[in-house]
Length: 274
Ligand SMILES: Cc1cc2nc3c(=O)[nH]c(=O)nc-3n(C[C@H](O)[C@H](O)[C@H](O)COP(=O)(O)OP(=O)(O)OC[C@H]3O[C@@H](n4cnc5c(N)ncnc54)[C@H](O)[C@@H]3O)c2cc1C
Ligand code: FES
Image (cartoon, rainbow, N blue to C red; front, top):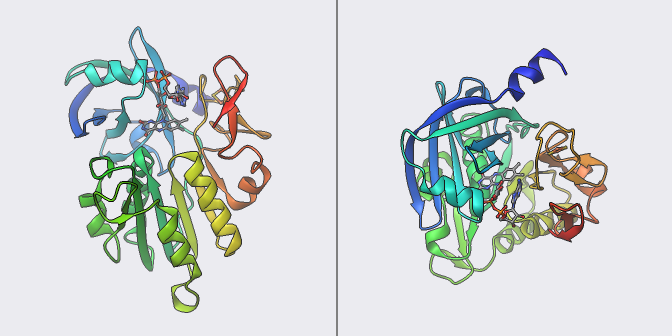
């Protein structure tokens, strides 16, 4: 193991400095970690919840030596984390994985659920460099739309919001306005689409960008244990999502399309729906 990876992979203990409730299921945690504060948009960290578990989380923001992650309560580890308050002890490894490639042209970001978190971090980076920055943000219902207020000043035009139940924005799934946008040719042609969200959404984004020949970078999720490419629990095709990803470009997505949004390895090593 190289010295750099050893340092990144060493567990550092730190304390929760602030907890912000985003909605009934999602909270943002901020803590100090010098190494993860150097992360690029798209990278993730492994967060250890003492005596419970260690889970992969995308880095949502960094400022000085502060790092923020946004966490949805979905099971055992995230439920325990949600019960923790300011001053609570946690452990951190990382940052791990690759990152989104900045594009200075006409870019569109498509986020679903907590997948909006790493895209907010990316949008902050692209806001000063991209010619045009558009955002489609989708959720099941209004309360689950994350970071709309933060996204608005970063985008060239107000973000397009979609909800499945029609409680805010367009009543449809996020890929519907994407299809309309991609069909527009000429000046508006997109130079890059970035996506992060439920994998079935990512699969549809992939199909649409392929049809309209627009490059895509999508962040994928798989079950993860080691986070550094050793255990194999995060495989998709021949790739390890923790090391070769989590960001996959169109070329790599084509190689894994038989699994994308379809199946993944479960904790017992058997294949389960993605
Ligand atoms: C690279 C990456 C970045 C992620 N970023 C975020 C984020 O920013 N915010 C966020 O809320 N969630 C994120 N996740 C998902 C998060 O890791 C899981 O929700 C969490 O591990 C669930 O743990 P649990 O014990 O609460 O749930 P469990 O009871 O273990 O399971 C609940 C659900 O979470 C999934 N899950 C469980 N463990 C893992 C794991 N180790 N890796 C991936 N999925 C798992 C299971 O498939 C199941 O559907 C990310 C996952 C990956 C791989
Ligand atoms: S999590 Fe172990 S190889 Fe990716």
